[in-house]
Image (cartoon, rainbow, N blue to C red):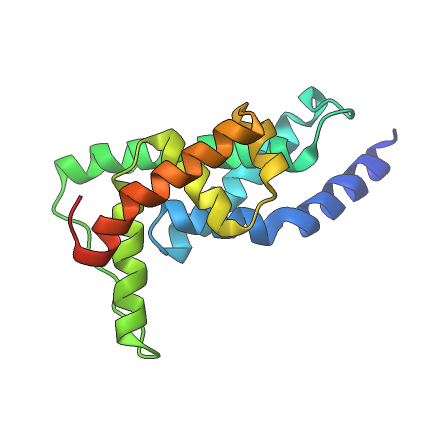
Length: 166
């Protein structure tokens, strides 16, 4: 494959998946679009750098989601260390559109943030609407195991989202 063909293929793949990857990152960063945008860019930079490692017989979405998840988790670890050293991070101003809905969304992401990294990744992928088959392949789960995990995560999240308790 020539260099220009490779660039065109990568650009097409980027265009096809950038919005979904951005929304996945947005979930990790509690709707902070600047951090999500940084993670999106870093994800695709890593994908470009390591493009030779992508097997053409593999699923591009699974590969790029895995890079995005790892990028987000690494960034969250860095932020946690920085937050411990500095003052508490500033809270984003609430949306003027619907404050009640914004509160619900923030509470939901706060509850999701309490989950284990794997459960957080799984539920964010579900919320993103990523096909179960892709999630199964990405996380190495059987269809039955995926359904059970999703059910347990929802059961765990419900009291937290509804009443603010874990």
